[in-house]
Image (cartoon, rainbow, N blue to C red; front, side):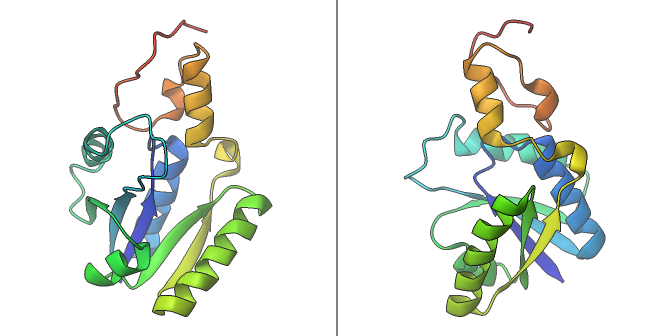
Length: 156
């Protein structure tokens, strides 16, 4: 079965990478889909994020990395994905993601599979990475693959 793992991935963190790798243990193939939401203020361009994630999975033919606009469930159906993958860090994530999964199932019939992150990664988020970066800390250890950091960083 093909699964779709969608997100803004601004940037793709080691937590995202963990969820993607776990997904590959459960599904035959995985589409990592970067949502282009004009309402979100992103740090990195779609092109930079595509390059970052494609670089990570360049040797794995089971992974396809794409960008999309519109509803995730519509894109999933267009690409033949039978299930959506969502990562969970904590109960707050679960509440939000469960509601979204219910809506997605209701409007499209596409089911969602929740994958809990590794406990050691539960504090990592793209927002945290950007906050560290904007405050002079180098967040590279929390970022998967290679992406250019846009701030002058101190070695804190």
